[in-house]
Image (tube, rainbow, N blue to C red; front, side):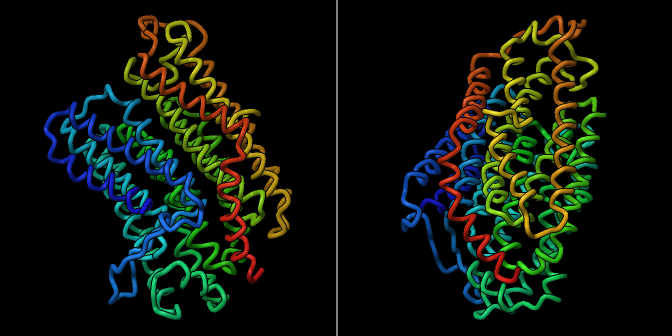
Length: 489
């Protein structure tokens, strides 16, 4: 029942939240609901991996051959844990933010969490698609109602991209279901197709799924919705989009593309890897040019997601293990960066790097928090991202699935150098140097904000020093995915 509770708690609490009138009560209600979800997620980690409480099956749409089948393996547990931990962090970090119709805002946030949980636990393709849409629809309303001045244009672009991607994926799901032995949508039925779908069909089916997942990550050239949407969305929604929702695309490749269409994944692996490399370099160069903190972090996220996607197509154990770890670590690190950006914007009412400076003199705790999170984002040794990136680069370099492994590794390494350029440049210009008329009146962050940043830093250091529990949690899933992918290699 654990996966069901992960969906039901935020779903029911979100629906109930629409009827709460007080802004303060809506905030408290959403925070309590997210903490309840986190407790359930943590409880699931201490249960034996094969326990019956980690799976649930019930009749849903028998006429279509679809069931309400949910379960938690290592991949699902690491991403549901990220989702469960992130929402209390987000709600606490933005607790002082006032929203018009706050009850609707927080209710939609919880509904989005329910959708995300459903995506990560679904073992039925049609159910997966249902939750995929449930996660996206609340975000559309959050951006369009509580976003910035250009929210309408940004939200429209976001809607068009995601709608087209979802439609392509639905076509692929229906096609595959018609070729399963039982004409069903179960994950087992889909993975069994790996032995029966001809290579010529896999070549075009691959793109139906890959484009949908590439849009969500986002991956070059399907990324253009992301910087505008991140910039115009309210900070709490941006944290959800960047820290958690982009993992839907990576998860989709690992769960529903690579094990199901392994031949198509192998045929188009070099093409997809080239797109990852182009996106990493392009996003890093764009980040260097940014004067807006939100857009800088947005492009930084594209570069990091590109490396994770590249490691998936390397089809090595080290690379896959690195992706599993890095999905969690990237979520924590990027949310930490967004929290810092939000704290700066709320205090100084600007996100422009050129208008800031010398903040370390006025807000030393904020400066320390940013430096530590930013260094983790750079994959400094003893921080969480170092473990994941080291494994991913090892996996890409040792890949036997491509003859361009050395080229991919070296080119991807350039993005790490570029990330150091824009990250250190941002730290220097925003927090060091002389204060100006705007920043001279600054103050340090409040106690609860210090505690949130301290918690993020603690996770960064613990995961950097002792990543073994996460590696043990995901190793079985990695081996299973690689076994299915290598069936026709």
